[in-house]
Length: 340
Image 1 (cartoon, rainbow, N blue to C red):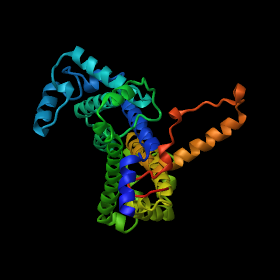
Image 2 (spheres, helix red, strand yellow):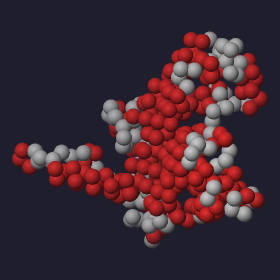
Image 3 (cartoon, rainbow, N blue to C red):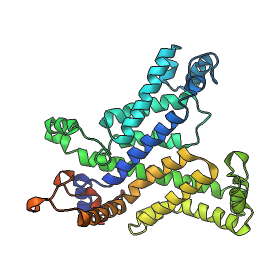
């Protein structure tokens, strides 16, 4: 009976709609940050000119060797480069603010991939996860929150056959589950690789990592690596957390605390090591595990706001979200449950 109820819930009740919408918005912001931070030097870094960091003919050879593709490899026209770059910039803005739906999200993924392939020297690992997660987001209803809806998607959906419309929720839940599994794999594999390292086994890895010049935060990193206790605790707690991350996600009561700990962990990576894009990408994907907690916080904030907002004449209240029940009151991870 419990199996039947779990299957019915997976087919009829969307999970983590609020969290996955946050994932989409934050991933769009990471892409936008990449475009904006290199905008003034775009021709030198990504352009087709002979004076660019990676000459175009070498870039094309590299693409062929890898068996990959990039829109920037199609031609040496500078006009084409400017068009593709600015299309990518506008797509990142649209994804961040929730405009354009899945079509723009797919275009953003292709354009961002093309830019990453054009110049891979600046990548910090977050790009790999982003390119894996964006296709999964296409399955989800990630534009339900934090977006500007034109109503076009709803009109198109209403015209679809009933057999196709009934697949919307299962596909959404499948996409959320795929992201959750991918995150668990990232953490576990990373933890198991660390366990095999000698410096991680003897508890000194943090000392060496924080002394790398490229990743050192002047004036602050030394406060950590000069303290033996912090190095010891930081090294072992990192390994244990990564290996046992899936256990914390599978237990509903531990799930928000595990996700919050992961976010704090990656905030520290972004601050102390300067891996901002990587940290934000990981945080974006962690939001799917905080969906129910975020929904409760939002309802609390709305309740507080309503107390201080004058009621409309005649006792009429404004109905938001189309009066639909909040899907995030249910489970927010791919664990078959009937209630949170």
